[in-house]
Amino acid sequence: GQNIDQPTEMTATEGAIVQINCTYQTSGFNGLFWYQQHAGEAPTFLSYNVLDGLEEKGRFSSFLSRSKGYSYLLLKELQMKDSASYLCAVRDSTGANNLFFGTGTRLTVIP
Amino acid sequence: NAGVMQNPRHLVRRRGQEARLRCSPMKGHSHVYWYRQLPEEGLKFMVYLQKENIIDESGMPKERFSAEFPKEGPSILRIQQVVRGDSAAYFCASSPKGSSTGELFFGEGSRLTVL
Image (cartoon, rainbow over all chains, first blue to last red; front, side, top):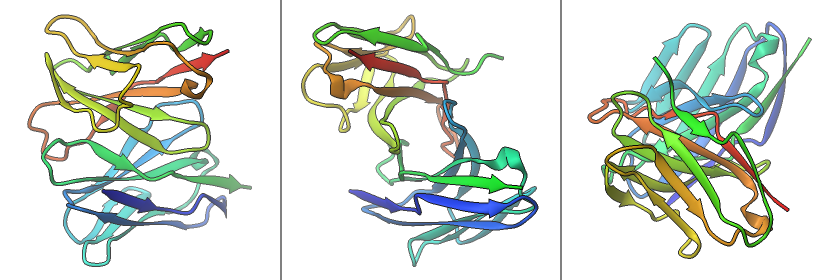
């Protein structure tokens, strides 16, 4: 089975940096994903990690440590539009390709 | 290049009625996934289909729920004899065959309200 944990809510200030953590326990592991979801909208893909280390993409970076079952999403130079839920998801190794999501972290960016 | 299309976007049903949700994957995508999202909760995997085949339905309730992805036409998630607890947003996602990252592309969701 899969168990994915992330904080429920976070608040950060416009222009600041915020780190959203995710820990996971899976029977098999074949990649970790971060998605962004604005209220009432579809989740949109942010990042993918399958090997240990940091993946940087503009203002967003994602880190993975497979031995620790740990990932984080780093958002820099926060903007008001970054207020959204951030979903951590893992893909197991069964080959079915389906993702298992955490409950999401609702980030509120304040002026 | 249209994304994943879901309809209806909003559906209201009374207890005991049937709900039918449709999903057309992105062009060129042959894998379809259905997820359910309850208010304030995460996305819960329900079922994974390829054309004419159910690959993994481990997240699907054993009763009242069924899914199909026919050779022609959209994928359909059917909920029979709906109950209030079925009220949720149902998201469809698709991916191409052989995607190296396995990224899923999500539709806007269908929001079911059971009165």
